[in-house]
Image (cartoon, rainbow, N blue to C red; front, side, top):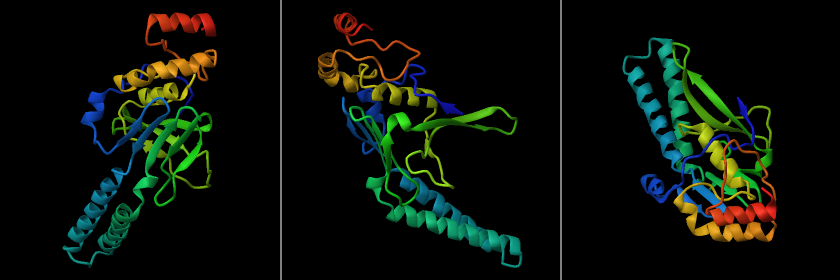
Length: 233
Protein backbone atom coordinates (compact mmCIF):
# COMPACT_ATOMS: atom_id res chain seq x y z
CA UNK A 1 0.00 0.00 0.00
CA UNK A 2 1.55 3.28 -1.16
CA UNK A 3 1.45 6.15 1.33
CA UNK A 4 1.48 9.88 0.50
CA UNK A 5 3.96 12.51 1.60
CA UNK A 6 1.74 13.61 4.46
CA UNK A 7 2.02 13.74 8.24
CA UNK A 8 -0.52 11.03 8.93
CA UNK A 9 -0.45 11.15 12.73
CA UNK A 10 1.68 12.30 15.63
CA UNK A 11 5.09 10.61 15.38
CA UNK A 12 6.92 9.09 18.30
CA UNK A 13 8.88 11.67 20.25
CA UNK A 14 12.62 11.56 19.65
CA UNK A 15 13.79 11.99 23.24
CA UNK A 16 17.21 11.51 24.79
CA UNK A 17 15.79 8.67 26.89
CA UNK A 18 14.73 6.74 23.80
CA UNK A 19 18.16 7.19 22.24
CA UNK A 20 19.87 5.88 25.37
CA UNK A 21 17.76 2.71 25.23
CA UNK A 22 18.79 2.04 21.64
CA UNK A 23 22.15 0.83 20.49
CA UNK A 24 24.37 3.88 20.94
CA UNK A 25 26.20 3.26 17.68
CA UNK A 26 22.92 3.60 15.75
CA UNK A 27 22.33 7.34 16.20
CA UNK A 28 25.11 9.40 14.62
CA UNK A 29 23.66 12.88 14.32
CA UNK A 30 20.32 14.48 15.17
CA UNK A 31 19.85 18.24 14.81
CA UNK A 32 17.95 20.83 12.78
CA UNK A 33 19.80 19.98 9.56
CA UNK A 34 20.68 16.28 9.56
CA UNK A 35 19.09 13.13 10.96
CA UNK A 36 21.58 10.30 10.57
CA UNK A 37 21.34 6.65 11.63
CA UNK A 38 23.79 3.82 11.08
CA UNK A 39 22.13 0.58 10.00
CA UNK A 40 25.40 -1.34 10.01
CA UNK A 41 24.24 -3.26 13.09
CA UNK A 42 21.90 -5.20 10.81
CA UNK A 43 24.88 -7.02 9.33
CA UNK A 44 25.21 -9.08 12.51
CA UNK A 45 21.66 -10.34 11.94
CA UNK A 46 22.65 -11.62 8.50
CA UNK A 47 25.57 -13.42 10.11
CA UNK A 48 23.29 -15.12 12.62
CA UNK A 49 20.91 -16.28 9.89
CA UNK A 50 23.86 -17.49 7.82
CA UNK A 51 25.38 -19.57 10.58
CA UNK A 52 21.94 -20.85 11.49
CA UNK A 53 21.40 -22.07 7.93
CA UNK A 54 24.79 -23.81 7.90
CA UNK A 55 24.13 -25.55 11.23
CA UNK A 56 20.72 -26.68 9.98
CA UNK A 57 22.32 -28.07 6.82
CA UNK A 58 24.88 -30.01 8.82
CA UNK A 59 22.08 -31.41 10.96
CA UNK A 60 20.27 -32.61 7.84
CA UNK A 61 23.50 -34.20 6.56
CA UNK A 62 23.96 -36.06 9.83
CA UNK A 63 21.08 -38.30 8.78
CA UNK A 64 23.01 -39.37 5.68
CA UNK A 65 23.00 -38.34 2.04
CA UNK A 66 20.82 -41.10 0.62
CA UNK A 67 17.79 -38.81 0.39
CA UNK A 68 18.46 -36.50 -2.58
CA UNK A 69 15.89 -34.02 -1.33
CA UNK A 70 17.71 -33.50 1.98
CA UNK A 71 21.04 -33.40 0.16
CA UNK A 72 19.87 -30.70 -2.24
CA UNK A 73 18.33 -28.68 0.58
CA UNK A 74 21.51 -28.96 2.64
CA UNK A 75 23.66 -27.75 -0.24
CA UNK A 76 21.37 -24.77 -0.81
CA UNK A 77 21.41 -23.92 2.90
CA UNK A 78 25.21 -24.07 3.02
CA UNK A 79 25.58 -21.88 -0.08
CA UNK A 80 22.98 -19.38 1.10
CA UNK A 81 24.28 -19.34 4.66
CA UNK A 82 27.85 -18.96 3.46
CA UNK A 83 26.88 -15.97 1.34
CA UNK A 84 25.13 -14.28 4.28
CA UNK A 85 28.16 -14.80 6.52
CA UNK A 86 30.48 -13.47 3.81
CA UNK A 87 28.20 -10.48 3.27
CA UNK A 88 28.05 -9.67 6.99
CA UNK A 89 31.84 -9.71 7.20
CA UNK A 90 32.77 -7.77 4.07
CA UNK A 91 29.93 -5.34 3.38
CA UNK A 92 30.93 -1.75 4.07
CA UNK A 93 29.21 -0.49 7.19
CA UNK A 94 29.51 3.10 6.02
CA UNK A 95 27.22 2.14 3.12
CA UNK A 96 24.50 1.14 5.59
CA UNK A 97 23.26 4.57 6.58
CA UNK A 98 19.91 6.31 6.71
CA UNK A 99 20.15 10.07 6.41
CA UNK A 100 17.54 12.80 6.17
CA UNK A 101 18.93 16.15 5.02
CA UNK A 102 16.28 18.63 6.10
CA UNK A 103 17.59 21.71 4.31
CA UNK A 104 18.62 20.06 1.04
CA UNK A 105 15.51 17.88 0.94
CA UNK A 106 17.40 14.66 0.27
CA UNK A 107 17.23 11.16 1.70
CA UNK A 108 19.95 8.52 1.69
CA UNK A 109 19.32 4.89 2.56
CA UNK A 110 21.09 1.52 2.09
CA UNK A 111 20.95 -0.26 -1.25
CA UNK A 112 21.00 -4.03 -1.53
CA UNK A 113 24.04 -6.04 -0.49
CA UNK A 114 27.40 -4.50 -1.54
CA UNK A 115 26.05 -1.52 -3.49
CA UNK A 116 26.63 2.05 -2.25
CA UNK A 117 23.63 3.80 -0.66
CA UNK A 118 20.82 5.30 -2.71
CA UNK A 119 20.34 9.06 -2.57
CA UNK A 120 17.70 11.35 -4.03
CA UNK A 121 15.06 13.96 -3.34
CA UNK A 122 12.74 13.04 -0.49
CA UNK A 123 9.73 14.27 -2.48
CA UNK A 124 10.53 11.66 -5.15
CA UNK A 125 10.82 8.81 -2.66
CA UNK A 126 8.08 6.18 -2.87
CA UNK A 127 7.16 4.61 0.46
CA UNK A 128 4.80 1.70 0.98
CA UNK A 129 3.42 -0.22 3.92
CA UNK A 130 3.62 -3.97 3.43
CA UNK A 131 1.21 -6.15 5.34
CA UNK A 132 1.86 -9.75 6.33
CA UNK A 133 -0.91 -12.01 7.56
CA UNK A 134 -1.05 -15.00 9.85
CA UNK A 135 -2.51 -18.41 9.17
CA UNK A 136 -6.03 -17.19 10.00
CA UNK A 137 -5.88 -14.44 7.39
CA UNK A 138 -5.66 -11.59 9.90
CA UNK A 139 -3.10 -8.82 9.63
CA UNK A 140 0.00 -9.84 11.55
CA UNK A 141 2.71 -7.24 10.96
CA UNK A 142 3.08 -4.00 9.01
CA UNK A 143 6.41 -2.65 7.80
CA UNK A 144 7.48 0.61 6.22
CA UNK A 145 9.43 0.00 3.01
CA UNK A 146 11.10 2.15 0.37
CA UNK A 147 10.74 1.45 -3.35
CA UNK A 148 13.90 2.16 -5.33
CA UNK A 149 12.89 5.18 -7.41
CA UNK A 150 16.38 6.68 -7.56
CA UNK A 151 18.09 3.89 -9.55
CA UNK A 152 15.22 1.71 -10.83
CA UNK A 153 16.01 -1.87 -11.83
CA UNK A 154 13.92 -4.57 -13.45
CA UNK A 155 14.38 -6.80 -10.41
CA UNK A 156 14.97 -5.18 -7.05
CA UNK A 157 14.34 -5.52 -3.33
CA UNK A 158 12.51 -3.03 -1.16
CA UNK A 159 14.34 -1.54 1.81
CA UNK A 160 12.56 -2.37 5.05
CA UNK A 161 12.33 -0.45 8.32
CA UNK A 162 11.75 -2.88 11.16
CA UNK A 163 9.72 -0.65 13.44
CA UNK A 164 6.31 -1.64 14.73
CA UNK A 165 4.44 1.56 13.81
CA UNK A 166 5.12 2.37 10.15
CA UNK A 167 2.66 5.27 9.93
CA UNK A 168 4.26 7.04 12.87
CA UNK A 169 7.73 6.39 11.43
CA UNK A 170 6.73 7.85 8.08
CA UNK A 171 5.00 10.79 9.74
CA UNK A 172 8.21 11.62 11.57
CA UNK A 173 10.19 11.56 8.32
CA UNK A 174 7.71 13.79 6.51
CA UNK A 175 7.51 16.23 9.43
CA UNK A 176 11.29 16.45 9.78
CA UNK A 177 11.77 16.86 6.03
CA UNK A 178 9.25 19.70 5.84
CA UNK A 179 11.79 22.45 6.46
CA UNK A 180 9.00 25.04 6.58
CA UNK A 181 7.46 23.48 9.68
CA UNK A 182 8.86 23.48 13.22
CA UNK A 183 11.02 20.53 14.21
CA UNK A 184 9.14 17.36 15.27
CA UNK A 185 8.30 16.57 18.91
CA UNK A 186 11.08 15.42 21.23
CA UNK A 187 13.59 17.03 23.55
CA UNK A 188 16.44 15.93 21.28
CA UNK A 189 15.47 18.82 19.01
CA UNK A 190 14.97 21.41 21.76
CA UNK A 191 18.49 22.91 21.53
CA UNK A 192 17.87 23.67 17.85
CA UNK A 193 14.30 24.98 17.88
CA UNK A 194 15.16 28.66 18.29
CA UNK A 195 17.70 28.78 15.46
CA UNK A 196 15.36 26.81 13.22
CA UNK A 197 12.60 29.29 14.05
CA UNK A 198 14.87 32.22 13.19
CA UNK A 199 15.83 30.60 9.88
CA UNK A 200 12.19 30.19 8.87
CA UNK A 201 11.35 33.69 10.12
CA UNK A 202 14.08 35.20 7.92
CA UNK A 203 12.42 33.53 4.94
CA UNK A 204 9.01 34.92 5.87
CA UNK A 205 7.64 31.63 7.20
CA UNK A 206 6.92 29.97 3.83
CA UNK A 207 3.98 27.59 3.63
CA UNK A 208 4.53 23.89 4.46
CA UNK A 209 5.87 21.58 1.78
CA UNK A 210 3.66 18.65 2.74
CA UNK A 211 0.12 18.47 4.16
CA UNK A 212 -0.59 17.27 7.68
CA UNK A 213 -3.45 15.54 9.46
CA UNK A 214 -2.33 16.95 12.80
CA UNK A 215 -1.34 20.42 14.07
CA UNK A 216 2.37 21.28 13.97
CA UNK A 217 2.61 24.30 16.31
CA UNK A 218 5.63 26.34 17.23
CA UNK A 219 7.44 25.79 20.52
CA UNK A 220 5.74 28.74 22.26
CA UNK A 221 2.47 30.68 21.83
CA UNK A 222 4.52 33.81 21.08
CA UNK A 223 6.32 32.08 18.22
CA UNK A 224 3.02 30.70 16.97
CA UNK A 225 1.52 34.19 16.88
CA UNK A 226 4.56 35.59 15.10
CA UNK A 227 4.37 32.88 12.44
CA UNK A 228 0.70 33.59 11.90
CA UNK A 229 1.31 37.33 11.64
CA UNK A 230 4.23 37.09 9.22
CA UNK A 231 3.53 33.88 7.32
CA UNK A 232 -0.24 33.81 7.50
CA UNK A 233 -0.56 30.25 8.76
